[in-house]
Length: 254
Image (cartoon, rainbow, N blue to C red; front, side, top):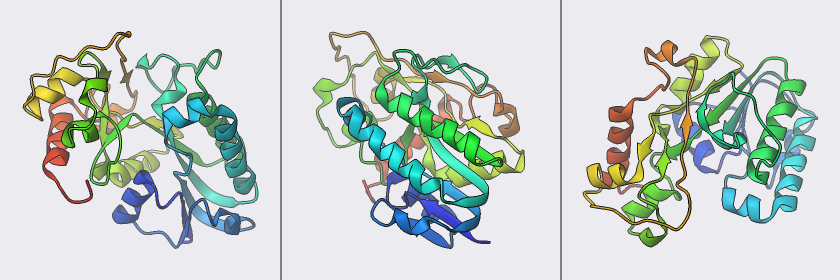
C-alpha cells in the first residue's frame, strides 16, 4: 500500500512512525514534494501544535495552515486521516462528535484547525478526522505532565484546572478501530482529571497552587466510546492515571 505520513517529526508523527509503517514521509521542509502524488492512504499530523504561539501570532499561524492546504490540494488519496484537536471547541465541556463548532470569538488556534478540518471534509470523500485532547506518552515535551515530571515552573500551574490526557501508546490501534468502523469523525479521549489529583496520585505532591484566573476545564466526550466497550470516554480515570504514571517513571525520551 502506498501511504504517506505528513508531519513525521512532531510528537504525534514520531509516535505513529513507531506504531505502524508508511511508504512515504513528509515534514515542513520537504512537503512540496508531495504535490502531484497519489496514495492509498495519507495521515496528516502537520498542523503546528504550539497553541500559545498560534494565538500570539495568528496571522503567521493562518498562513502556515493555508500553505499546508495548498500542498494538500495537489494530492489525491483513497483515504485521508487528519489528526486534529479538542481546541476547535470554544468551550470544550460536555461536547461530542455531534456538538456544533461555534467559530464566533473562537481563538485563532482552534479556528484555523477547524478551517483545516473543513478543507479535509470537502477535499477527501473518504476521510477520518481525529480530535485529541491533551496527550501523554514517551517523547512528550510540553504540558503540565512534562512540567511536573521535570519540576518546571510549577508556580504557573493551577491546581484546580481540569484536563484530559490521551495515552499516545494506543494511537494507531485506536485509529484502526475508527477506520474499521467507517467513522469520519471521532474524539479519542480520556476521563477528565483535576491537576491536584494528578499531582497527588502520580507525582506524590500535595499541590494547592492557585492562579488569579478562572479554572480551565476540558470534558470532550465520544458517542463512539461503546466501540471500545466504554461510556463517554475510550479511557476511564484509572486507565488515564496509569498512563500518566507510566510516563512519569519512563526516563527514555522525556
